[in-house]
Length: 247
Image 1 (cartoon, rainbow, N blue to C red):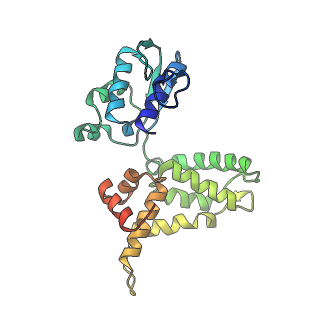
Image 2 (spheres, rainbow, N blue to C red; image 1 turned 90 degrees about the vertical axis):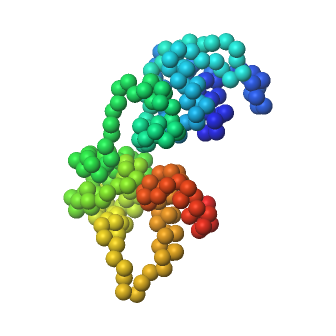
């Protein structure tokens, strides 16, 4: 969300605070009084909003955009991020005081490749869920297919896993998801394990373009995440996006 819009979503606004503000609006913090607000991707928040969030967490008070009165609420805040916030603090991209204010109780969630034992449970859950959604009689995943799922590195974590199961359910013709429905994952595992130059050679530009496109797809268009998948920084990713005319 743009900074101004996010501020309005979190803290609300008064009538006439900006063009289009035709009435008073309560923000999420005000609506959640006595409850919980979950802030996903907290590492993406702008420095200006970080400062306003810090004030809210310290004083449990805020002002609506365009307002002149402090409002107090009792809200529990849960924040999540896929970034290393300690490194973001060192880079100056995230406020140190806000980091320590948020870091009261930390729950580390390992990458999916580090908790392979969860794959059968997640596979069963997603296959049944999408089976019901698409009205298909899918009841589970065959053992050979599970071995493929366990052997893949899942750079896109649970989101990528969910998409793979959703695609398999859409293509499935029986009650179980078979190994052939995950053939693309097997090809990806072979590629990532050891890339060997074929005798006839390759077109390096085409290969690079393909990898950039795949990274962007797995990261749902997020350039920072896509750059991490390729081991480069965001500026290098932007350069390649412009170089290959990707949108």
